[in-house]
Amino acid sequence: MSRYERITGRPPPEPEPARRRELVPVPAGGPSFLGRVIAMLGLTGRAPLRILAVPRDPIVGNKGVGLALLEGRFVAGGHELDVEDLYRSDSGLPAEVAERVHSFAWLRDVAAAATHERGRDVGEYLTRAWLSQHSEPGGGLAWRADMVGRRLLTWPAYAPYILSSRDSDYRARVLRTLSRSAREAERRADSVATGLPRIAAWSGVVASSLTLQGRTERLAKAEAGLARALRSGLSEDGGLVSRAPHQQLDLVETFALLRASYGAIHGVMPDWLRDAQEGALSALLSTVLGDAGLSSWQGGNAGDPHRIVAAVEASAAHAGPLRQSRGWGYQRLQGKDSLLVLDAAPPPPPKAHSGGCASTLAIEFSAGTQRLVVNCGGAGDASGQLPDELLHLLRSTAAHSTLTLGDRNSTAILDGGALGKGVGKVDLERGTRDGQALVEASHDGYVRRFGLVHQRTVLLAPDGKALSGEDSLIPGGRKRRKADVGYAVRFHLHPSVEVTSTADGRGALLRVRGHKAWQFRCRGGTLGIEESLWIDGSAVPHATLQLVISGETPSDGMTISWEFNEAG
Image (cartoon, rainbow, N blue to C red; front, side, top):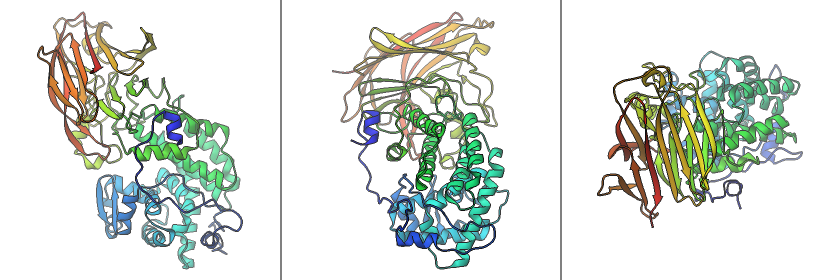
């Protein structure tokens, strides 16, 4: 039984064939090509005399992307460029491509697709090209502290792919750049944004103190910097302050490689760092649905389920899904094979995440491996693949499966993209009712404008065959609006769901080929079926439908009830 299955209680999706790296931590008398890497050397100056260890990266790269690289095509964030063009137009590269180029994350993909002998040609070619423009510290993206930190994690782990050349001048340049990078990352790490960027920067500094000769005396300072970054960048329950699951996945992978760096020198991660790793994994798993993909929050999408399973397997951490959280903010209910995730927190602060969404009290729901209720999603790490106007709309309350009032966002999204006033407080209670798991939460995002609090109650049956809920609008605050206000409760559906209205207009039958049908019923408004869209794990939009309960609420509020029941 795999680690993923033990932790989640469900089998992973069918694995894609991939070539695993043929590398191991460096022991005495290790493989000959590793010996050549370590023995290259008699170098002078401030470059490290040698790499002390070659960590074994536990994260397997994308074989398809690696094969494309071997053929001369660089694929990232929905973009595909000729390798020859990467450095001819470096300043004009899409952000997703530029970050992948400068982080050297593509080395994972090369290792997944090729043997060392074949992969080192690509690795050394691209490393030489990078060094030709970026070997000296500067102020651009290439030397931003989080990019430097990622290289400090990656280069030692993939030394056989970039340092097996017989060209001593080239090897010296790589090692000098590593030495400079360690100093620059330590100096600049606290200058990048709180959260994942700062954690990545300090993780690289720690890794360099473990794997590069001449850096070991800096380990205590590096670990202190990482501890500060974790305190400011993570909530108390292990989730990033950005509240973005797709970034949380990146964090889990970063921790896995950092753990490998400790292991490569026969060291053990400090207890506080191991606790942070387990907390991060637990937070990530709390947003995973039944198909092993992520639920879509804060501009993210389902991602690649195989990548998520690989991250769990590689983490070597003992953590199950976080069931209840405050800082991370996602509440998880499970009834057998049915899973529900509810956003029960305000959006992230603008400084923590520039793509925060007005999604408070939205839900996603899966039955078995089938997604039923979804949010529209976002581009995740491939923002350049979607138009800016669409990205703006995907952040709105209406793009999430929750209630909107007065056709307004629960938290304002300003023209410049920043979040404005809205949800400042979320009250939350968990428990049971009639044997069903219950979450009741409310937010104040509409109090200032309409004098109404939105309260959502959801209940999931133990067998997972019934999900029911209520959306209540309750007077709150000092403002009292005399006129009725229009509302809409939306349930965006996965594109595979076929919908048929019932004769009385208060329900619908949801069918998915190969899965059991579900019945939907509502009370308190008019049910309609409208067009919608869903962004898949590759940031590709798909046409779909949404159930919309609409009407008008008096100034003293009202309640809308709804339920999903497995048919038959």
